[in-house]
Length: 204
Image (cartoon, rainbow, N blue to C red; front, side, top):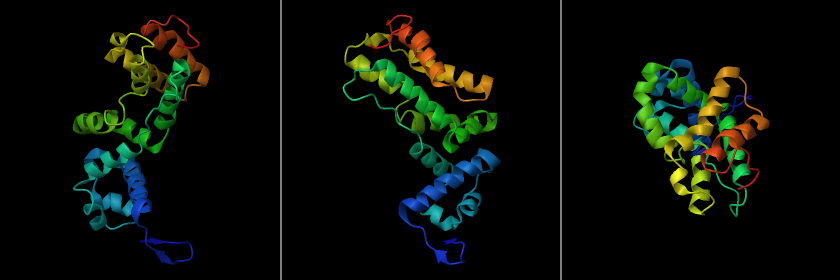
């Protein structure tokens, strides 16, 4: 139940309720950390009884993983696979947008706290990142490699992580989101050369 501005009680159901719970658990974990995450705390923040949570999830970690999974974006290559450079830039832009979102801030809070990271990192990578496409360039790179735009053997784990690592470093170093020209520089000077497409390749 929630209370409107006029005091009328309304009942949230379905997707509206799930979104409220997901938003609540992401805010809660940033504030209290994984170790102090409870169904009571999530329920209070979502203005819903904990019994409602237990109907769908067994514990607060499951609520958190579900929220992170559903709020993790999936990169998509352009139709026709005709713009590798543009799709890589768009994938990195998607990462920046996610990093600044409640889900991205929650992940940052988890991974920068040693206790939370030890408890969550394996599940986070297996049940969220891997299930949603891995890094923010892997899906695009795999799409083009499968179509022969560059040798598939060049798509190593290191290459798949280059863009994400450099964007993360820029966010940490500056505390501000990289501009589009910064993302283009990462693509032109790091990712494309790593897959054999030269120091600057406007198009594959």
